[in-house]
Image 1 (tube, rainbow, N blue to C red):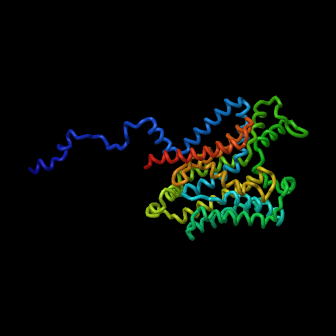
Image 2 (tube, one colour):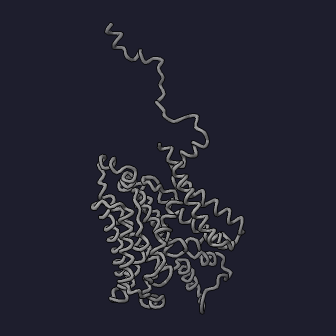
Image 3 (cartoon, rainbow, N blue to C red):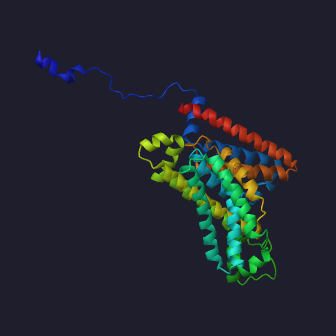
Length: 384
């Protein structure tokens, strides 16, 4: 009796050896596609971007693709603001102050240089620090005072916008003055491709009295010359890579997603929710300040009345939503925001080149926003 009861291995003979699986083998193609989109949130905006480029290339012909570098220049400010907005939205919050922070920090950089005579490099550092400090204020209101992010950042937006006009005295610093006395403020607007080509031409002894022509019978150099990529665009791409790595491969990034998905569960799992939120708002403010520096480079001047202070908030949220980042938090990719900004830029450029009424452009972008949120709800059913 004892021998039979102790011989457990004999009882396993003929038993099923396969490991338990919870995947459905009979998934339809639509369900598999839905699951793929859930695992790779940036796939939807990437598909939309590819389709948009192909449609406009087929519609407008070969003259459209060479203008893609212009799209990057147009979206560099909104793109950087969208990166900042993405971090906050991933925590199930929203930041309505990023545009105002960008303009105010650009004013600080300009006024510190021309009003107080501070070196441009130090003025830029002060502007970046001011952005992080304003972000810390928003984070403090959300984490300590327990004010909802929408209300907290709406109040900060109004305060920063008013401070911007009061401090600047509504004075604009002209492009010529910046170019002559503080060119570093315009650095993100410079084109490294032009600097490289002019340097190579200088080594070859090719000196031009005024502007270098686009066609000089040097195919490679002419191609590089016409690329027209600014340091601001390179900054946008570099920031996207850095933030993508931080969100995907660091403990901080996992904490951001955990807080956005379920803050109470994250707290129970040992995540310091308040510290994570504070770091997110500070980093968002810092990135918005970088957008302010890029704003000077893009328009060459410092203006407290720049439209980015008001429109930048909506445009950044638009890029984030179209990029597939869930407004409910906890799901999305920083690359989605990058692709979302590119989608808006491609549509605005393509429809503009086609001579379409600008109102149709806004109508189409509004439709894309609604579709993006609808697709997000559909994709979330996989998790449910």
